[in-house]
Image (cartoon, rainbow, N blue to C red):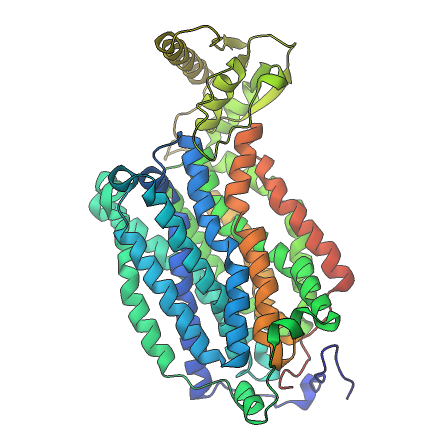
Amino acid sequence: MPLHAHGGRDAPAPGDLPKHHEPTQNEKLVIAASSLGTMFEWYDFYLYGLLATYISSQFFSGVNETTAFILALAAFAAGFAVRPFGSLVFGHLGDLVGRKYTFLVTMGLMGVSTFAVGLLPAYDTIGVAAPIILVGLRLLQGLAVGGEYGGAATYVAEHAPNRKRGFYTSFIQTTATLGLIVSLMLVIGLRALLGEEAFADWGWRIPFLFSVVLLAVSLWIRMQLAESPVFKRMKEEGKTSKAPISEAFGKWRNMKFVLIALFGAVAGQAVMGYTGQFYTLFYLVKIMKVDPGTANVLIAIALAMGTPFFLIFAWLSDRIGRKPIIVTSCLVATVAFFPAFKALTYASNPALAAAVENAPVTVVAHDGECSLQFDPVGHNTFDTTSCDIAKAYLAQGGINYENADAPAGAIAAVHVGDVVVAAPDPVGLAPAEKQAAIAAFHADVLAALDAAGYPRAADPNAINKPLVVLILFGIMMLVTAPYAPLAAMLVELFPTRIRYTAMSLPYHIGNGWFGGFLPSAAFAMVAATGDIYFGLWYPVVIAGMSFVVGALFLPETFRRNIDD
């Protein structure tokens, strides 16, 4: 049989394999333990994203509201930033020591860090130490997750029969989404039980504290597992890699597939996943002004509807291949995201959609006097120019606006349809006078927005809930399709001796950097431009890149034998 690119051999054609293979009791335990552990790990990570609004008020209260929310999302992304480093550390250990014990360590580290977030005092109690410790805990979580996925995917794949490797590994993806559903249901239930005021004050801590129970159960289950038979045999034969990092990334025959996997598959999958599972929530709550509880329920329903498709697309990939599913979904995302989110606007807040169409908001100002509406250190109050005063108010309210240039020195004005509201000129005003002028300007703009039909919150009775769920379900299809066969494809790309290390890095660069930074980057893009759809360029461009690179260079792997 011909050798494949990494020294292994092509698997026999499907017809040469047993036609029926029912999972053994041991294989079922492997799938259950790896998948339940992954669900717990992702429950922790998703939880932070769901509670970003509460966390921003608890730990970043020393800056303005828009910046606080972006910083909360950035702290969320900080955990993703270190995931590639975690993949190197734990991937190295996994290829040297073994799969089982490595992801026992990652789980323990993840669980302790999550539990500690529930105990962390807020900014009002310990000041700037609160956000610093929070970011530190997020970094520990990120390091742990960096070693978790590669271990679980490798472990399951090395137990799976060749014809069902995609289907077996898809349970990891499925339970990752179940982690989001569990965290969603817990948040929704606690908000209903405690009331919004109590939940915002202290109830948001309960899901973090509850994670210690999930940690104990998951660790106990994983302790029952034996080492991967493929790795065990290789270790007994003395064929394990002595330097998996240098072998995986220092040799071009391996490194080129790391790059192809990253840019031709994982990056696109990551931005599609985080758009569907995170940005949709931020979009509904912060921009469409849908009540958080309602938004959570709608997304949970769509997730529950979409989750079985992880298994369906994975099953399909075992028959037609991994590549066509991944690259086709990337292409669909590039053309579907903009119309999908515009449809979501009309379905979730029709009054806002009508107001934007009938009375568009425009900021007329000299561009040189306008600042980027994001201040990471919290020192800019955006009140030194008339343009900043105008844009800061609109950005804080999530109001869609366009920009029109004015001559240098002109005072900025906000146009709401035919109504013009001049922004105050802060130059020369005493602090009290400036604050009074800004307050009066806010009141005038708000009155103009009210008169033009801009709602302060989405009307619950006007939300077309079935249509919202249908749109979210469609977006979820773009989450499940590329993610379902991804674990199997990454495992199949690399030989056993460096598999844990080699597959983990592109996965965590893609999901940690390209995907993890999506919510904060997209929201900041919206705040900076005033265009509520501008943040979608982030996932659209990256998904388009993955389609092109994947179509040209990504190899098909579904017939490969991974035992070598």
